Length: 186
Image (tube, rainbow, N blue to C red; front, side, top):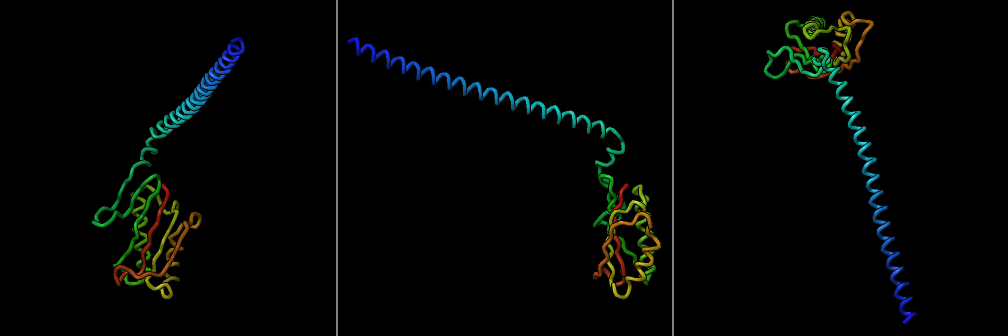
């Protein structure tokens, strides 16, 4: 009976040790999880504070009337039912492709088109010295490129040339010889 008692006590102590070990593991695991959660909360709160401060900073920035104007979209030249002649957004003016059917030659059409672009840029609050991009479509590039490019070179601000692409293209109307589309910074 003494030996059985020892076995029972031994088993009880093993069971007790096992139970204590399980409880210890459970507490340790819960403690570790709690620590991880706390760390994530601190990180999240830090991120949230940083985001909040950035948002507050951007609100300060947006209180400036110029910044507020950049976040809106302004459309100019709405007489055409299919498009705006220009759109101003985030400090950029996008001018739609401008054409002229009043002149009969490439030089006249190019001058008139560039004059329209000057007017639209002025209405938007900028000018050709702030051009960013230009796309030019010419009906017959072999015949008309040199004459068109001569007018363009006289018109463009030599210190502030935009990036440009010029290609030959079929036009929407047979009397149109050139179309020019630009974008400019405010």
